[in-house]
Image (cartoon, rainbow, N blue to C red; front, side, top):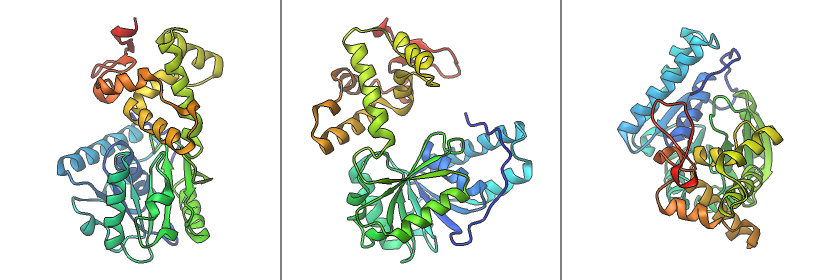
Length: 310
């Protein structure tokens, strides 16, 4: 759950005022929360009314925790929620916006369709950003009539807490677009890092092979789940072991990104571990399915290694 330890003051961008966030899942509601708390008017868009209501409830609950921690006051909570409007239609939600941030499922076809739709309805001067963690920005931009205004904004989870934003330039992304997003990221109290458009960018090009190697270590019997995670936590000062982190990211997402790396670089070192493939095929995707390398029970803080690995 999100808890912020530093007091935050509302800030307004001199240029951008209205932001649309497409997708109301974990990343989408975190991005909406962050922009709204910093004074931006946010249109949160999803095809599911139920998902949107759940997202608003999640944001409200996270704001309550901030109030409890004295990170913000009740007035800031109220203004943040007031800054968010929900829509089930892209065409209705993107009128007069300055920036659209797509935070949908990590699926190329879904993202391309969203960007084609955005291109039809957003104002001509609006920037289109994707929160993709691996899909090439150049490919996404090619689905629009404005590739110079398409860019990557790869936020980290949980968005209100994590400072990093990978700002990914596609082949056609203009310098003006890049500069605008770098400045905007700073205004919402993030640390933007400019990255070129290569498979996996920086974060996942480094992280995912590490996770994949941890899965190989388990698959080959080098050590057990808890042992592998303990080595990385205590020996490398990682806050979470790679197998537990994979569960939180989603094993299906890890597999997708490894396939992107493998297809992009044509290098065997990026081939996903067979165990990772088997787990996804079996439906053991981590936290989202209730079981991955560990088992997850609602309301329980105890971390238990899944039976098959004991």
